[in-house]
Image: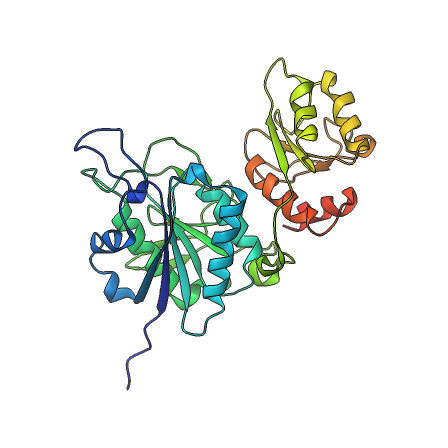
Length: 331
């Protein structure tokens, strides 16, 4: 009997802490310093998992990602997934905005092939660097047939999270990533084990196809706090924002003194999307705020950063507030 075919995995490197370098024992480091070939060399065993081909698409701190760079990444991932000699894609990425890149890929790459993002909370020169183990686990997940059709995945600390709902929840711990609905699975004995599946649309079942998206409309985000100022919302409108995510208290509420401004913006055609500054929990339409009277949209359980991206994607398809609301219920 012939041996099973080895998975052919494309590895895209974008920089981040996983490629960071610092003085021995020092907390400070320089992100995006090492090229992809050194990341591979630091993770012996990768060659046993898959036939790997690597490219350095970017070399940046993930805090420097713009929407234009994010679209560039998505287009490259989609192009690789469309190739017959690629069975899956792994992306090394800085952790600061990893969840946002994962979410955009989850919604816009029209493929069932595994797309796996990973990174590191400690630089490559740290005594307990977590990057090599995370990269090994990410390639193992991407190479496994059971990973197909699950959307974009984030593999960190042997946990497999969905790009739909994973978030960075700690500034420095290696177990910084978590999902409010739990991980999809974990990596055990060098292979994925699955315990949860998604029900919301993504990748091949999504209406958003990166090959048909030239640019993302500007969407602002304002986080709630005591003593807020209406001028911040108006400034986003003056900057050309087509929508503004209001990261409200608790269930997405807004102080009464802001309500006239939010209604005014909606009347001017600038959509207001209510999310929760807590980052999780399902919002109820018209609870704590009159969405019907304002014309605003409730973000369901999407965190403010993900609500920004979903609103931008939705605005490439429609300008109708009712249809925007349906997009948030669907994804």
